[in-house]
Amino acid sequence: MTDAGFALAGPAPGSGTPLGRLAASRAYRRATAWLLWLFILGNGAGSIALWVDAGGLDATRSAGDIVTTIGRVTGMAGAYLALVQVVLLARLPWIERLAGFDRLTVWHRWNGKSALYLVVAHVIFTTVGYSLNDQISVWAEVQALLTTNYPGMWTATIGTALFVVVACSSYAIARRRLRYEVWYCIHFTAYASIALAWFHQIPTGSDLATLTVASDYWTSLYIATLALLVVFRVLVPLARTLAHGLRVSEVVQEGPGVVSLTITGRYLGALHAQAGQFFLWRFLTRGHWLESHPFSLSAAPDGRSLRITVKGMGNFTRKIAQDVRPGTRVVAEGPFGAFTTALRRRDRVVLIAGGIGITPVRALLEEMGGDVVVLYRAMRDEDVVFRDELDRIAAARGARIEYLVGDHATPEGARLLSTEHLCELLPDIAEREVYLCGPPAMTDAIEQNVRAAGVPRRALHVERFAI
Ligand SMILES: Cc1cc2nc3c(=O)[nH]c(=O)nc-3n(C[C@H](O)[C@H](O)[C@H](O)COP(=O)(O)OP(=O)(O)OC[C@H]3O[C@@H](n4cnc5c(N)ncnc54)[C@H](O)[C@@H]3O)c2cc1C
Image 1 (tube, helix red, strand yellow):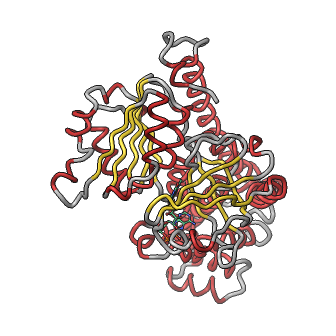
Image 2: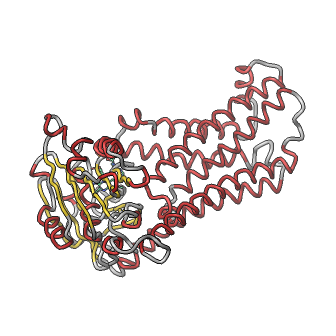
Image 3: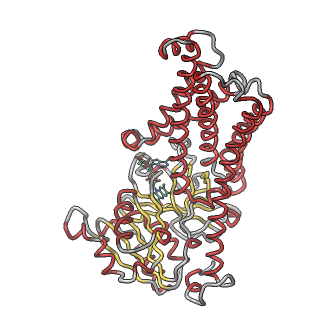
């Protein structure tokens, strides 16, 4: 196990030191992220340039032509971003390592919104452009497009409607009202919407159907996206399941409604999992085959077993203790996440956990040395899990632990981890690397307090227990 913390307390930064190597690895991550975005943008621009080169703009004479052309370009850009959307969440390991699941989810959200706006712009501009050319009203043009035998129009309409429903269901207000499984099923139809977009764009689209090079290029983009999806979301998890033969070996009650599962299997070292990371877990037991849930490792992986600790919060997590027994087969996708010791650049660290957010923090504490403080916020004494383990590890590592227990509905509880309280507990907090994990409402509130205490954004790493 590497001990980044003890090493960090050593010499000043330089390329040969551990700190220097970490700085180099951050610079590498930043450079690769830029390259990735340049590649994505360049590829998008290239696919539109091919269309222009093949004569896509030749028919731009009237005002109607110009408006229609804007519609075509926004349509192509929207279709392209829809493909990027799939790639971003295709669980490509190097993209996961590069961005971290949290940042990828943010990129996915922004990219999805941009794709939606472009697709809507495509519909509006092409319809208005056609209506100008046909010299009829926009409404008459809509009716004409849907009733005359215009190729690919119905597939396009259904695809666009699905895309809009998927995007709307992801807006926070709608998302909060939907059960996760319902939201997920709706989200799944995005694949159907992209397939329908392909029919509209390539074989029947009035432009690309006739422009061979551009159409071949677009077809290869669709095929490459599909291939990445099949390989990384189906074949890799399947191969891993067969190779590792994961099974639950132990189920331990940690406290009221909190249970730890130990999972064993073959060649676990080959997973290259790190403390702070999580997997998507699927338990092959009656009633749960179809759902996979993200859970962080609650102990640093040792190559022989993986441990997760789950708090009963909803439909699945409340049933886990009774439904998942030793011997249950497990499919694990991952490891995911960049909430690891690799982010550490400062020799002083504070690990802040809210509620069940203690799971990756407990694992990170095991791997971190040097000046480490753990602030563990819980509502009630009985909600504190791993107290013995944490005390033992902290004593061995020379770390300090503060258990901050109290209901935030009371004035004393509300003060816990406020900016003033953070500064009292850690007068040097602004100079520390901060790792923060917990349920989203709690992390959002604490994140603001940590920033107000003077911690720069680059020294604050947040893992939210929500997708
Ligand atoms: C990166 C990450 C790490 C996590 N680590 C832990 C952990 O170590 N221990 C722990 O107890 N919890 C952890 N969680 C939270 C845990 O995944 C959810 O509490 C659990 O999936 C809820 O499922 P449910 O069916 O019991 O709840 P539900 O009542 O169905 O849903 C409650 C909420 O949980 C979320 N959720 C539900 N199902 C899923 C799913 N399949 N995938 C993603 N989110 C879902 C939704 O936001 C939903 O609103 C983690 C979450 C994330 C994102």
